[in-house]
Structures are given as structure tokens and as C-alpha cells.
Length: 290
Length: 167
Ligand SMILES: Cc1cc2nc3c(=O)[nH]c(=O)nc-3n(C[C@H](O)[C@H](O)[C@H](O)COP(=O)(O)OP(=O)(O)OC[C@H]3O[C@@H](n4cnc5c(N)ncnc54)[C@H](O)[C@@H]3O)c2cc1C
Ligand code: FES
Ligand code: FES
Image (cartoon, rainbow over all chains, first blue to last red; front, side, top):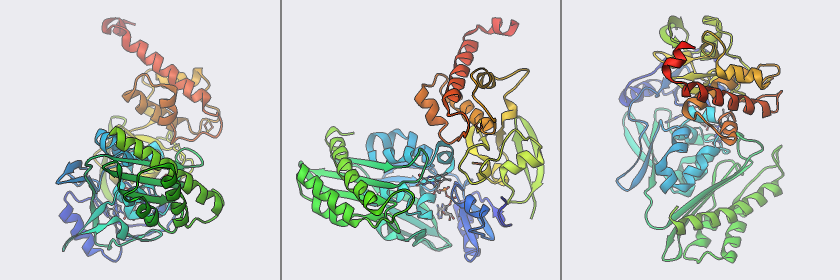
């Protein structure tokens, strides 16, 4: 399958890329890992007239802690996240999600930022970012703005990104004190999109829950932040009763639809069980420092 | 509009004019006539089209040829040098293929794995090949083939240099 014809540029600087996008605001698109965009071009579900390939821009592959934040640049690929010792040691929910995204070949090219910009409601990173309360730096020729993950997604495959903007950086509050996370995903076979996914982030405070982040994959028109379940956990000692209640609230927040992967009731049940399991796992990690 | 690009494929430089929409797999198969790399699904699912881009296995149906400008591409044709590569020998000895359609992709993913992990466990092999789909074999013999190749390459590496050169 051949995409419709387009013009192509692979600028060597971010400023050039932003200028090109600005010029082609009506018909331009960013090309990152291409693992969602190129299939869409081939199926002609998208036919932009101009592609701005950002892969040759240096420094967009940063993955480091800086100024109180974990910073993930636009060209950090799923594989890099999967292999990062920084993530493995300090950001369990990211480290656990990375190897569960797609298959090794897709992970070698696809980026976290591209996945977020694509905003597939079955995408795993959206939930991870909602759980850790990430924010995204969106740059355009005229400046930059920072948007919270919870405000960023506006529907299936829709975000606040303007056509002339590039998501240059993901920022996650740097880990401090006893923190733990987990990502649980049910898939029909290895490499598949989620039937259900649940991301958990726990910040403990003096033995009690300081803040809890819970977000759901593939059970609604976009990744869902389970705010009622999060609120119910705040200030609580994590016992079985509290965990069970959070599971029920998360299941209530889900808006699954029946499809080949399962019925609505089944998916809601998986959300409930995964929330319970994820909270236990995240709590263990917060206590053990892992 | 066509533009000039230069891609080094299996060590040989190729300078050609291509349209930006040309996929890397078409560049390899149709422009260079290297038809070892297969197109299976054409929808980024099967891995039959796997090649190495600067040493990293990718689905060449999901990379533009212009994106490989100035870079190194390695295809299945590079494996046999003066005789079968241990990976090819492994697939032959252990019956790692039936129809053979997935095999070039399997071999390129295996090659990248063995470069990084010369002695992979069964789990590591299955994980590394999990983006390559085979509809025939059931994977058991593919795993054995990669184990065979690993042993063979280890044995070859253990032979002292002079002895290896003489044999
Ligand atoms: C077989 C297969 C299985 C998959 N399984 C999963 C899975 O299990 N879980 C999952 O989460 N995902 C899965 N994916 C999707 C995968 O994660 C993609 O890599 C990801 O969605 C897109 O990232 P990319 O860098 O390839 O973006 P691209 O394909 O390059 O771009 C995607 C979209 O985002 C835009 N974009 C990209 N980067 C930016 C940026 N920095 N700023 C602004 N806009 C940008 C592009 O213009 C385009 O519209 C799968 C994909 C395939 C092919
Ligand atoms: S042909 Fe490229 S993944 Fe199937
Ligand atoms: S041998 Fe037939 S698809 Fe693998």
C-alpha cells in the first residue's frame, strides 16, 4: 500500500520544524516514530500534504530528572523507556508499562510523545500520564505552553494540540519519599492493544495515602482518570476494605463498550480487579522503595 | 517530488531518486531487487518485512525510504557469506520454517538479539521474536533454531583466532 503523495522535510533544528509546521498549519503533520501515522497514511485515513519528520532533531531524546521533574523528550522511544534504569529504579508505573506497549519492533521506533499526541483511547501511555499527573510542554513558533495530562485529552484521537504545535517534553513530578506505581494490562495476545489497562501511582505520607493516581485504558472514549477512586483513597490507611472500595469506584468510572475483546460487564470487572491488584502492588513498592 | 537519497544496504551504497511516500520495503524489494525481505500484512502487524536500520530491527513497511537517507540497512541477504550463516543453518537443521514467509523477518530479529545477547534463554528468544508472527510452525522449532545458532556462534567465537583462520 502506498500513501498519497506528500512533501517531506527532516529539519535539523526544532525552530525549523516549528516554522515549517506554522507554514503548513492546514495540511502539515509531525512524523515521529511513524508507528501510528504511517499505517494511517497507507490506509489513506490521513493524507497530509506535508510531513515534518522530527527524527533528526538533536536533544529531543532526553530522559532525565531535572528541576524537580522527570523530563521525557519527544523522541524517547518505547524501547528506551523499557530499558531505562532510571525508570526501573524510580518510576515503576512507567517501567512496567513500557514493555507492554505493542511489540519489540514497534517499540524500537514508536515514541511516548507520539503515542500521547495520537491519543488512542486504547493507548497505554495516556493512562500512565494521568496517574502520575504529568504535564506536557507544547511548543509552537510563537511560544510554548504547558498543559496538564488531565486537560490534554479531549476525546478519541483528540487533544488540545494545535496543528502548528509540537509536544516537546513530558514532565512528571520527580519521585520523592515513599512512592510506588504499577501498570496492569490485559491483552488477547502479546503485542496487542489492551482489552483493559489500569495505571496506579501512590504517594504515601506517614503510612497513609498522600495522593493516589488511578487511570484506565481502553474503557472509554479516552483514557479515564478515576477521580472518585483517587479521592476516596486520600488520607486512608491502605487496608482491604479501602482497596476494595477504590476498585468499585474505578469500575464505576469506566465506560466500556462490548466488542470482540469482551462484554461491558467483563471489562468493568477487570477494571475493579486490576485496581485492587495494582494498589497492592504499588503499596508494596512504596514500602520497599522499588 | 522525487529527491535524491543514499542508503547503505548490506554494506553497499545506493544513491537513487525516490518519492517521499516510497516505503523502505519497496525501496529494498523493487528498486534494489532484494526480494528476501517479504511483505506479509502491509499493516505493521506481522514483522515479515523486518530489516535492521542502523542495527535496530524495524518493520520496513512502516518506515519511509527517505527516513533511511544516510543510514545503514541490513537485510536477510547479508547473512550468508561464503556459506549459510549459523542462524540460517539453525532454521534448516531444526526445521524452523514451513512455508518460509516469515523466515527473513524471524532471522533479522534473531540476528539483532544474538548481537546483543549471545546466549539468550528461551524466554528471551520468545520475547525478542514477539513482533514476528508465524502462521505455520507454532514457534517451537523457531526457538530451537535460534538456540542452535547461539550455540554454533558461541563455539565459533571460542575457537582461537589462528585456528579459526586456518580451518
Ligand atoms: C502493531 C501495533 C501494536 C500497537 N500496540 C500498542 C499498544 O499495545 N499500546 C499502545 O499504547 N500503543 C500501541 N501501538 C501504537 C504505538 O504505541 C505508536 O508508536 C504510537 O501510538 C505512536 O507513536 P509514534 O512516535 O510512532 O508517532 P507517529 O506515528 O509518528 O505519530 C502519531 C501521531 O502523533 C503526531 N505526533 C507524533 N509526535 C508528535 C509530537 N511530538 N508533537 C505533536 N504531534 C506528534 C503525529 O502527527 C501523528 O498524528 C501499536 C502500534 C502498532 C503498529
Ligand atoms: S509487512 Fe510489515 S509488518 Fe507485516
Ligand atoms: S513458516 Fe510459514 S509463516 Fe512462518
